[in-house]
Length: 109
Figure 1 (tube, rainbow, N blue to C red):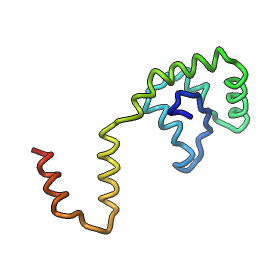
Figure 2: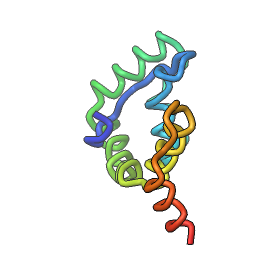
Figure 3: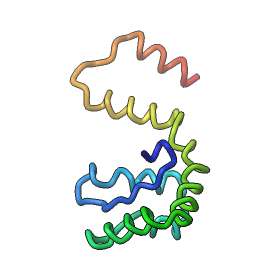
Figure 4: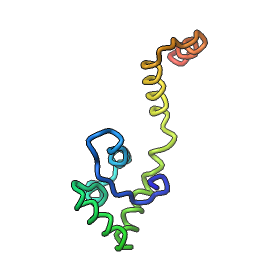
């Protein structure tokens, strides 16, 4: 839903999978005042935030307007592709083929 510019209330968890949405909001540069409306600190807080955004159309429109203005920053980021490539190559038990290494050297020039 975030990619559609919709407000997603999140309650970050201890493990990485429970913190993606918060990370996206920070990467997008969402204002601190808006983050307080989207990131809960407790289960009770999650219910309060979700209820507020679900029942207050004016608040929801304002929050989603900010998200829609910055959401393009989340897509088409070449540095993200390069970082995933680096990570996957680092953890792969298979050595890249010579053609791949030649292309990398060419790009460095």
